[in-house]
Length: 172
Image 1: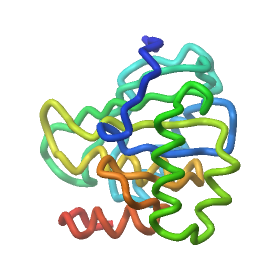
Image 2: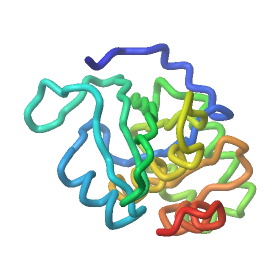
Image 3: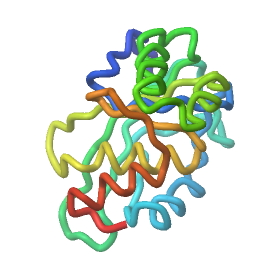
Image 4: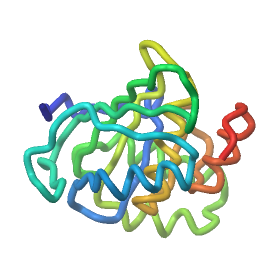
């Protein structure tokens, strides 16, 4: 079941993505295929989305499962939240600060276009601690959205997220 949660997302606790499309939609089959292609992971969705096309309410929270392709371990549960950007002021401020920290580099344009925030909880209760970063990398690829890490000070796209994953031993 999809639930509306408090929208005060703390960027220090999330991998924060700023996406241009204003609406929230999960294209399960495409996202699962992209998970294999982009981050070599098997992706599942715990909740059932009632809309056949994957459209979500304006504010939604979902739990995904993620496991490196071919690994026998249980998949890791990763929480993802999404809200219109107007409801995530702290996320926008963190992105603006990250853009300033890297001198723009084109990310300023992407952040300016953002109408929706997707936030991946950085910590997991159990499982692979790299799974949230893998989920953020996947979302960066499917949403064409820049990522601000929980520690701030940087902003990057899919390539940067994959490089961070690989540095942690998750081959992409």
